[in-house]
Figure (cartoon, each protein chain N blue to C red):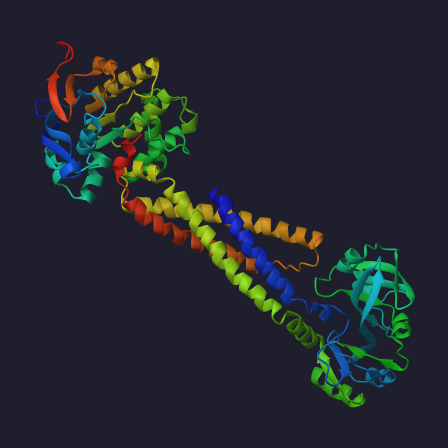
Length: 348
Length: 236
């Protein structure tokens, strides 16, 4: 019972922390792409929140910059479409191929063949489509090529073929961004400077800068609210642990009375209570961590919109907090136990 | 085992609860002596003050007036910390409701009394096991307390009470929750162990069967000793 109470509290805290971590990492949609530096029109916050147009043939100049391994033209925009009577919205990205460059297998998922699309899990659930099904978007019929993990309750992503995207978006001679893949050891500052000079009215951003900017905009307000939830989670979870420990100790007042009757000193009782609290705290916290890992996995499977990332460092920290709270909470009843009249043992 | 000097002396012991109109005189001017190797039985109806008397003898309750001396140590004059030492080394308790720690095994229940006195590890385990064998529970050492019969629980409680070699065993209605056979076994065990170990025992009860093992009998009524005699001599 006590172990279950602590486990429940740890589960509650860790799920809220995992939610916070999941949403903090929402910008990883950019860092996962096979590139390091984005060239955009000046005044761009990130591809999701800003529109950017660049002249497509500037890509040749960019590919000649020292340290640049590949230049990928990027087409990106929101698309609204209807599916089974539902109005849906998706952030579509298309990466053009770089001549002579073959990306490793995971990255090839971002380059669907013509007429096909790679959509995220949340969009797949919303549209009710599976691999091989068809979506009608902007007058084009696209076959679902792959379904990737990702998406959330705020936005969904789809990766299109670059030629399809050009046709669908009506971009002729223009791209939205250039994504530069750098050689190992390339001088980032020098590449940025040269690239911006090569493309009129442009600026350079690393993928991490876009991720951070994107994350900040998505999470403004929302993440603060989740942060408050984390705080409340710690307070409520801590209170549950404290109350569980307190109740478990007080419930056994008679047993402590027996120990006093057989001559247990205050110090002996302190050691018994604290040791028991530590054991209950350890078992409960361990159970809570395991339950959180399972719950986070289940949430990812069943409700992918609910972004969760469970880090072992967080689990370890919550484990330690649970133990500290359990031990401190045991000090309160210990004082009361010390005052128990050992004559309690004569009461039937 | 009887010696001339009494093991226990209770002198004009009184306990009053409440005040003025709510005043209850639970024990009044009780005198009592007990010797090593003997069982003193205090009988009386419910509410006669038996348990209050026992609590004061064991240092669990402070008397309003009077003295309790165990081997000439006046325990009624001791401070709280010193009373803990008395309960640890000089007296052992046996309760009506056994008061075993249900989550622990029989041997652990006895062991914990030794742990309280600073005896731990294998020494505590072997001493606890030996005591349970003496209490005819050699086959039940590792049984969980909650899985023992009532009679077995009471025998574990007696072993626990004797764990630290107390001079005085105090038993409160030790057979009240037992059937006839178990009650008889517990009574015999109490008498045998008291004699074997040379300790004294004060048993409070209204169970007539306990007369069989008593060396002295006292009748308590309304907190006062009404009669005292050896049970073999006659009926109260």
